[in-house]
Image 1: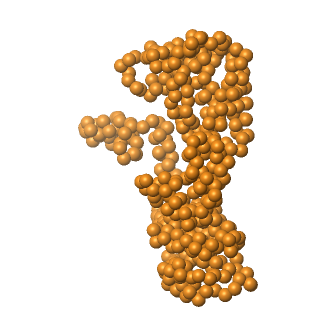
Image 2: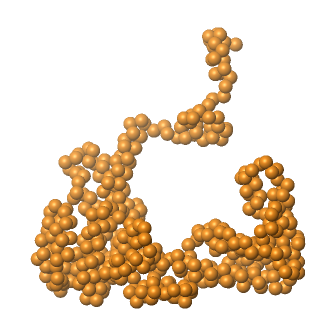
Image 3: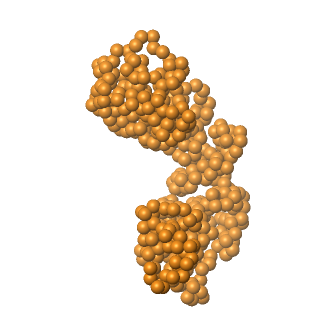
Length: 449
């Protein structure tokens, strides 16, 4: 023992502290592994720059994040971090630089309405190609006095109300009026606030009231994506019984048909029975965001039936010879998946979804994340059904009491290497301790059995 450690030797608490391993630096004080302790130590060692510089950088980042949340909350990630100005900076980098310059010289580098307007003109307009289609032309005509007064008021004060009111009153418009209103409308973000949503709806009703889709089809077409987002947001705000597609369309028919083709929409809404008879119409409607929200579930049901039919046909071909080997099973599974992925309609189905899986007549929902997973799950369920009906696969507890029994046992030969993992999993599930409950291991065993 060293001389300097005499006080330590006399203190039992200190001895215990010396003998104990160093605790993790987490707030809970729980023990951690060597790898976790090493990672925590490496993280502490990595943060060694000058204290003042680290604090300043974090403060600037927090200020920029708050400015984005307050002034650019409706911007897309592409607008914030994707588009670049001629000098090569993104909107976030430009805002960060201005924040630092403003800290050093607030009068020379102000942060206010004009700066954010310039920021939006530089970056937001590039993300919206509609601005290019709505460029002024020499023969556009004169601007309406009513709209001009509203635009002047908006330019001076930032108040949208005068121009929004003028839109509801104006009767005869020129292309100059339409271009000016539409360019102003593209700066409105309906999701940002109820007020902006109301002004955006005024623009949509302005288009419908004056039948601008017929008079200025090119200009209204440039606004189509914006209208689609507006109507989708309108639908997302609806609750209760009005959430039904027919109710929403009829209550907003003056502006809903700016996005949806009227004849096709009314045909689908009036249809009763199997939606496979109007599959082409559903595909047409689901080309828009609003159409997908309204009729996507019906289209997905039709496409799911088509996918399941192809899987059933592929499996029938697999077992037609009376023998299923691991090689033939794999080839059939891959060929079926490739065939489905080559179909154009498969892109209209969401990748993550619930499918209806059938095992021995019992139907249940099964989550899949891709078409390949769906094909594999269906093939396995069908092959397990044949194996159990043929008597080469052991039944689980109470399975025979719930499942359908075949009139005659199928005559099929399945290679042992295919059956072995299922047989092992079922044997483990049958012999698993009954008092273990629904542990993760038991669930995993039952999943593969």
